[in-house]
Length: 580
Image (cartoon, rainbow, N blue to C red; front, side):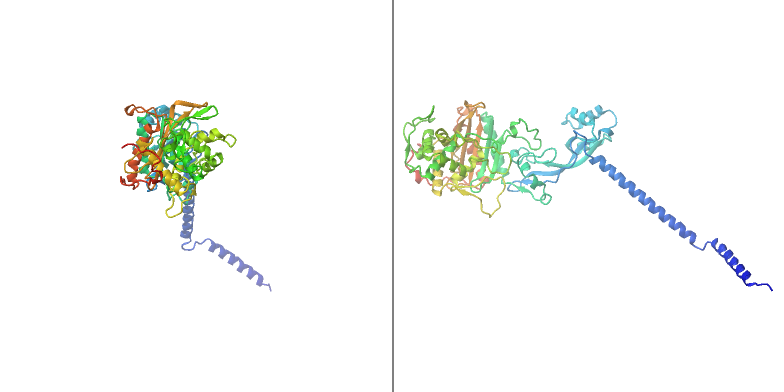
């Protein structure tokens, strides 16, 4: 009998395999739709990825086209860093930043006749030379600027040219709303956006500190006083046909500089180059000069403080004083010995030289050091001149005497203003500053003269105006005190011009309670024919001092009062008042 079990198992297995094959060929309901959905999803994801990649690539290409580094010789297209405003002590904006429009070109993208395009651009921007425009259009770099500070209507006209190689973009631009006002102090920024002069240069780090760009830098300057000082000096410079003029107004109690002027001036919005331009010379902080008889009050105060002048009634000869090969003489000798107040009132060279001789070189130098005359002024800007004075080996008798009456040493007008503030404010020297001092904080200072010496100096300076060479500086009601100074200009090769002067008036007001110091000066004043043509300080610059005081005193809250005067009893009877 045959065995049937294996055959049955094989048949069963074969039937199972055939059944599986048939099931594999059957599509279940919804499987096709599911497969299509998965395919669509993958396609959408793929399209999104391609689009995102294309967008990112396009954005990067645009970024490279606009901000790519310029070729060698092209100016940088990188925007300047944000920059803080500069304001005066009352919040008046002196420098600010705004978003300006600039025109640039990608030379390789320019289509058509470049000379014709240069003509078209020059017609829209006539202030930009055509040659400079054509040079930019034919530049071999990838990007260069054609012009900055484009006006909105100019930008629209440039867009209308339809030139793909031209680029109009916004960039930070520094603006000086008052143009030339205080330009020597404020300074300006260069093409790279960095400070190139004055406050802008000295405070570059502070002005661009990201944590403080929203906080303005507050100067001690008062824009109202600045405008008065500049306008009066410009008027006097023109009237006297002078080469240049300069002036400073200082708070005698704090050393804060309220105004600083140097003429000729320049517009900070269009400063031009610096090399060889007299308009960029800051004559208040950078120029050093022999300031003549304005220095004599210092010598008198030094003698009083040191005790080498024992009494105000002490007299000094005025006949010629021989020193080596030279003779010191008075410009207007009185022919008799003069008391201490008279030496100052009549501006005696001989009398002041004798006071310096009694003082001696060591004490003279020590006082000059305390007053800051031997070092650059400590004020914050970098344009500061080094004072010229004899070395210890050269500081002999001749230097001692000539320095006593304002020659043989050259300093800046700001040095002189600080010294006069010390002389009249009670005797304390406060470092000059261009920054507004915080209210309520002690003002740094060092005592140089006693209160008594300061009071005597105020009385003598007042008498020098009412009775002496400074009469044209008097401003009725404001109790002005001060001193004229006329010094011959030095020749470049040595010696002095005998027909060219630097004339200065240094003083303060009101002398019964001094608040403000004013120093004004002219270079090579030729004289005003309408007022006699005199070339001394009393004729050329003293009237400008008077006008400055008359205009700034009301602004600064100083009221005129004809009934008030400083205490003159200390020098009473020691000089002869003018007949009224």
